[in-house]
Image 1: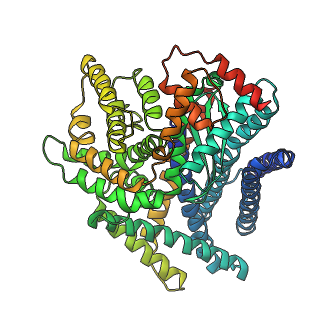
Image 2: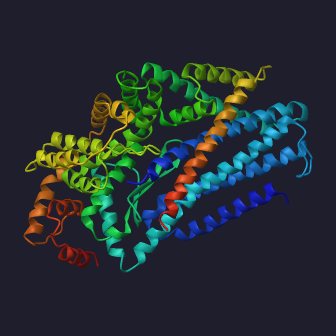
Image 3: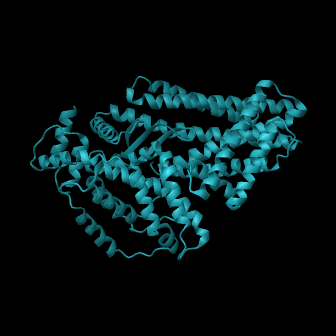
Amino acid sequence: MSFLDRKIKEIESRIKLAQQANEQFKHVSKALSPYIEFMQNELLSLTKDLETVQYDLNLLRRWYPVKEEEYLSDDRGRHLLTNILRELVDIEGEFFFQIDILMPLIKDWIYQRNDQNIEIFHKLLSKYVSELTALIRLKVPVLSVFRDNYLCHSCFVGWKKVKGHVVCAPFSEVSTLRRWTILAHEIGHAFFDVHAKQFENKVFPKVRSKIFALSSGIVKEDIPRAAQIWLESWIPELAADCVATKSLGPAFVSTFISDALHWNPKHVDFQQPTHPPMDTRVRFQLKILGLLDLEDFNVNKLSQVWNSYTRNVIYEIDPFVENLLLSPEVVDTASEEILELVKTAPIRDIWISILDAKDMLQAKEWKKISVVSLVGALTLLPSAFGLSWILERLIGEES
Amino acid sequence: MTRQWQLMRVARTFLEASKIANNALTGLYFLQISKDKGLNREDEVRFKDNLVKGVDLLKGILQTLKAQERGGKLPSEALLVIRSISRGYFTIRPDQLKLKVSKAIKELEAFKDGKETELETAERVLEIIARSTAEELSTASLRMREVMEARL
């Protein structure tokens, strides 16, 4: 058997194994159905692709009947062989991105749903995520799992057909409910995926034009890279922040700021500039909060805290970042266009219930409320506020 | 706040582009060789279909290159593919890239219709897309694996 045949057989056996595992996931829970169906279709399509590669390889062999250790004399034949090899690499890549990453998340979901120590928190997390997705009227399924970090995994078919998302919260924060507000940013990524075309039609061209129109204090050759960073990474990140702020308001922003304190406010990772600096993100969130103008909430106080922090930290900024990436015209255009597109602002509808929940918790009273209101209220209470009695109530309610 | 979402998005785009470019090239080579060796009808249809998808990809890229000038729609997948082609051509200027892509489309369409035509530019452009998207894909996979391993 040639090395190529061996490779094809190996991939075939991985697909079969995944199909068997996927079969076992069926009937576990309705919540998993979209993901099981997604993997099933992906595995079928991978099988078909593999059969095509095998077929093309056989065709090539019929046309060029040389032994594996011999050279193909014809250039076209050699090109074909290269392509067939690349097709195999693509199949392996697809398997990795569509199956290898998703399958452990599904396994974790099943484990967490069945483990008596985690089950209640896992159910609570799922409820929280489904309430949040309903608030922003997200029409794709979103599964939630405890993992090592906050992240959003997207299930795509082709370029843009979104089949679902899996959002994760760190396992270490299984019972630190107030930290779950960060998940709103991950759900914001799901929102971006669903509305990607609108962002590309409306936001991308305006931001790109603004960057290309810059002239003072910049190196012209840097412009395309700056545009690429904004369009590929920074617009989606700010859009996710916008969705999160408009969903949870001060609850999200205050948790975000406490996380942002770990970072130099103007820091940009030059190797992988995937996120705008914390200062840009926080200021955008504060701007949204100001526009929301929520009752009994003073955004100026939060702004003052952030300003005093950023003023007291010493940092140097690269001219590429300062003059190009963070040019006020570019940042303002991106912010305005994103705000224009993310119309939904569920916090307006739930803010009063968050404040009511806060009062209720402060009075150590208890009545059944939405998980979103509870999580939101917890972020507004002093950090020393004890959570244990709330957890006891929640566990009592869920079990 | 990990990079997983962005890595996934980028990797998916490069994977799709790589598949389309690879399939188009496979179709192109098989159809060329078949002139001497013969091909059954079913295979011919499949390989021509691969070419059509390749042409569609190039048309999407051309439209995006034009949209960049007049401020029109900028699909992220086309932008990413343009980035990878530019790298493959060692940072070719957008106007030159536009000429090459549009020549490649003409060559492929003529070939698909059975006309005698040069295929040099089409082969080169598709080869660059296939090669550079594969490189970008392996970088994204590596980063993704790092993210996953960091969890252990």
